[in-house]
Each structure stands twice: as C-alpha cells, then as structure tokens.
Length: 312
Image (cartoon, rainbow, N blue to C red; front, side, top):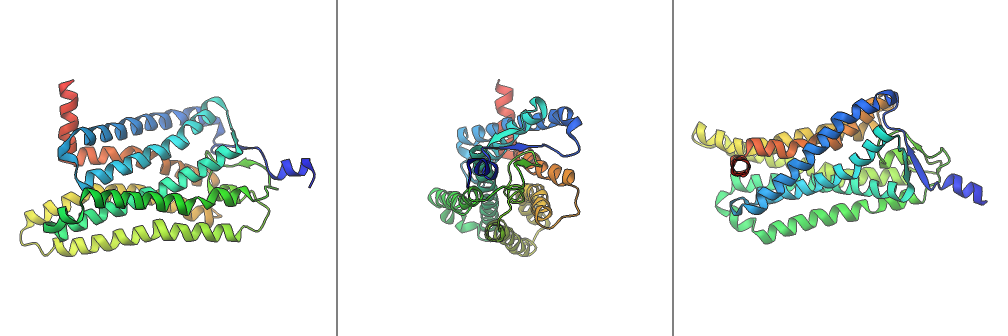
C-alpha cells in the first residue's frame, strides 16, 4: 500500500461536524451546554466533598453514589470541553488517538455508571427486604469489592473497542457527523467488514447495561412485593421514599441512553440532528441531575449542604 493510500485509509485526525443542520446555531447552543457542564462539575464535586467530610454519610448508598459521581465527572469532562471548542472556536479536528481514547472513556465509564446503578439497587433491596443483615452484607470491604468489580468490568470489556477501531480502514473519509467520537459513528466510516465489531458492541451492551437493567427491574419487583406486605401505610411510604431518588436518576439516564443506542443501530429514518441532540442529552442532563436529585430528595445530604453554605 502506498503512503498516500495508507494516510487516506488511516487518518491521523478526524473532523467532528457538531450537530448537522444546526451549525449556524452552535454558538447559542453552547451557552446552555456550558451552563449544564458547570452545574454538573459543581454538583458532583460538592456531593463528593460532603460525603467525604461527613462520617454519618459513609453508608453503602452514599458510597455508591460517590462512585457514580466520579463516573459522571469523567464522562462529562471527556466530552464537553471538546464540544464547546467545536461550538465556540470551530476547532473541529481531533487527533485519531485522542478520538479512540474518547471512545474508550465514554463507553467504559458509561458502563460503570450502569454497574453502580445496579449496585445501588442491590443496596435498596437488602435495606428493605433484609434490613437486619444490611450492615453485615454491605460492609465497607464488600462495597469496595463491588466498586472494583464494576471498574474492572467496564475497563476490560470496553478495552477492545479502540483496538477494533484502530484496525479498520476508513475509506469513507474522516468526517464524523457528531459532537464527540462514538463507536458506531466511527464504524460507519469504515469500508471493511464490520459485522464482528458490531456484534461485539451489541454483546457487550447486553452483558453490561442490558443485564444491569434486568437486575434493577427484578430488584424493584422484590422490593415492591416486600413493601406492599408491610402493615402500615406510613411504613410503605417511608420505604418507597428511600428508593425515589434512585428511580428518578435511572429513568433520566436510561431513557436517552437506550434511544441513542437503538437509533444509532436501527433508527435509519431518524434525522441525524435528532439523534445527536439525544446523544448530547445523555452526556449532559443525567450527570447534572444526579447530584441535584439526591441533594434535594435525600435529607442527610440536603441538611449537610445547607449547613456548609450557612456556616460560610
């Protein structure tokens, strides 16, 4: 293969278009994007600081919430600075290696978020269905082991993604119609047989997000069965109240994630701008809303945050 052909089929950089059809509005779209990113950074960092400095919050639910906050920070920081540089400074070029690193970080830490949601569902299941053994089952050692298992699963299963992309020939050019590097967006530029790559991606998605979602559903079915067997209405309301924040963040996270995943693979009639806006909502809104929802709905966190600000 000649040097010219090698360079053409293995580009040293990719071009990120942004949101196709809305390029004239990028400057204005960047304003809410930037605002949401700032709120996400402040909210998650504040949550981490509050839990770290308050011994009373060193419980399984809050420790898993901190792990989720770290994953939120990684995903949003991996994507938003580059998106803002595209929108405000027209800096659309991204080095190939940086693009592959972005693919790995986005997909691996999104997978970790799914695992932390499942861990939080398990915590709620034990707390409600087997409260007397909650402290014995979810010790700090067990929590650390669960967090480490989620971390290793996300890193190991998603590590082949950039390797598979590195081996492809990009005969359809190096222009990505997206605001960030995404696995399927790069696969669509390849002219080689990508069935193996797509099959692996689908398999990993089912073994992580799919199984996690099934586990969460089963956990809440068992939780509801136990709650509705409680003798008093007050006890039922109190038990369900401890799950409300978790259910809210799951709905906010999984809804755009599933839509983005399905439209990228099967939604050929969906307008590209609609798909990319939903994909951006996935890396924006949940990571901002998670600390807000838990801060507003969780009494211990709310009181501690108010205490911090009133003392200052």
